[in-house]
Image (cartoon, rainbow, N blue to C red; front, side, top):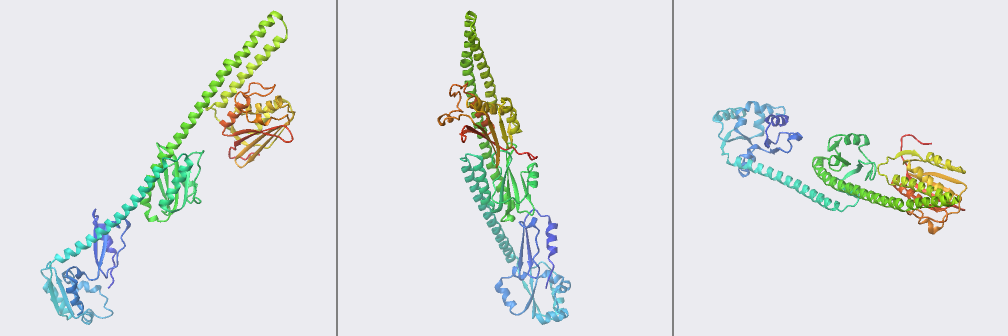
Length: 521
């Protein structure tokens, strides 16, 4: 006998029951497919013979051996319709029952008062003797209670397993939070986040997308599987997470105080059926991660601010010393020389006053350059290195050559850097020719100023960038290269000096290459 069980699902839907539903089916029924929205609240139990729910197996087995046809009162009440469900194998109903069964046993639950007449009609139709076995519902109640109890135990066991998994996940997350408290920088923090996501969800790929242009860009375990277009769409949405088709990948935002710090992309997890549970854990990890990343960034900002403050304080001390000492001394020379000149009218006192005045003017200009070197408000813009250098070197009227070019982020203070290097090469080094080589090496722009002068002794090379350091008879204020170094460091670059072969000096500046859409020739 084969029956369609689709109507069982329809009945479950029509119930609209807020509680659990327990469904009993006799074995000939096909097991219905329960929709996902009901799977946690519906239990399907199949029994070989529904009479087993009313009679103890030991009693029922005796009748089974004698080929007895078991029925309940409900079946007998509509026996004319129910026999139509049986496959008669080409035989008429009467012959089918007489050939397959020796008797009829009606398990009487006492709920059908007109049962006897219906049994007699069915017995007469089949030609089989019948027997009525009165039963109470106590056994049935115990049977049902036992099934429901076992179902509830199974649910509790599943809940316990789920809870244990969550406890283990949260314990791992708490351990992660504790360890993250000691992480010193963002790169290490991001690596720890990616490692934890990899351990928790066993994905094929993990990608970390930073929300800032500087610092950490991505932490990749394998290649990205979602794509930048979808990630950018998610980035500009209000959602805290997004699940991607076919439901085995997701992305989580890491945010703090409405500031997006980064996005973790988790691709092709091993068990996509657990994705809802994973999302809850991932959101908790994201909250813990946001605190760590935010603290690291605030600490780095504070450290930068402290350094800027220290540098500014140092600049003010230097400026004050120059104003109070060097310029004051020069002005004293001017006034003294003019006083003597008034009395003697000797011309060399005028020359002395002019030199002291020019020195004061030079110092004031260098203080302006020093202010630019320490400036934190000056906006850097993308410029070609070659144009800056040509504009400066042209003023000196000596032979020079420039090879190559780069795009870098600088400001007007870079002209002062070039001017100091070129001026030192001519005035202090006695150079007659300067060659500038500009090379792009990976993402670094290397700028070499090569002269043919007398060179710089090795012990002096280590000090040429020190504040106020002067060397030789041509030494001036001692601030030019110090200011140049501070300016290059503000750009995030480096500057150092080397010997040139066969003679002369080579000043080398390294800056990060600026990226734009157009290609520079």
